[in-house]
Length: 308
Image (tube, rainbow, N blue to C red; front, side):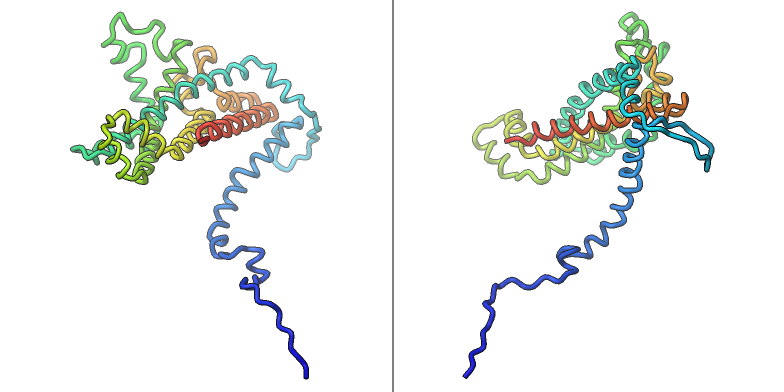
């Protein structure tokens, strides 16, 4: 008499090779594949090419022309770090971020908290704050130039209190002015993000805080701010990335980074070095340094904001 040996049941179904490679939901990968290809083509490949160019003596040539582009190591980075215009542009964007990011977070959170309350005309105010974000930058810049130029409406109202030199030609006020402009223009997006985050904060927490006698400020500090912390992390990172890539506003408002480079940004200097002066290798080195700096700042912000 023979006895059959039966393998003990483990309770775990066998996974096919397809599931091992593509996971349990291969259809999800199929849907995500076009966007992954888009990211690789639009972001990953240009970044890799920029890194390669930054280590070579690269210059523009006619299509199909075979020209030598020798490896130069860190020479382009040394040129960038010795250039006073480049160093000043990084200082300028640092000033911009110090003003723009905290101002954006505070105003967006306060306004979103106010617009989340049952007030009259709430839909109108929500739409009003979002309109500047979707309006063309050229149109917004034209309005602000009309208001804040030397003979503009704001200076006429201020009279003797108006700054001299005026806002856009003042080396001290040019970059703070641009930071305020960008905050105003992009505030609608961040208000929208905070409004979405506020919907996930349980109303019972506000009711409990109100029963315990907490004021509106105490509810904001102890309930709202901790409840929307993930959104705050996202807002800070997005504002940092957007500010580091600042180009259109100083190019249009101050006629290309004036006065005397007081509002020039790294991206604007990249354009000047790479396109106007024909040094794409130096411009690529600036871009790589900018990406590394933004990555470090974003990681530090995330670390600080998401800690317990």
